[in-house]
Image (cartoon, rainbow, N blue to C red; front, side):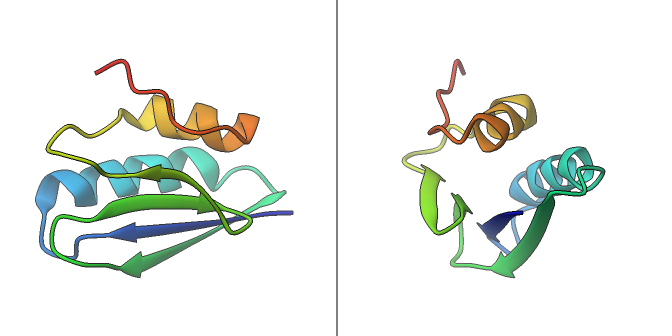
Length: 81
């Protein structure tokens, strides 16, 4: 079972929306467990089984599809944005 941890800013609406979309896409997979944790202001980071696949650097966020694809493939997020 993949253990996904998402740390997100608890007050940023755009990060909250991204988090909700990622969780919604992943929750139907019975081999995936998603844990959302309040992080620092402006934070959005994703770990799969303890390995970082995305850590926000700058103002650009990945799309939900980019995050979900990376989670499923077990690779780092490659943002086209």
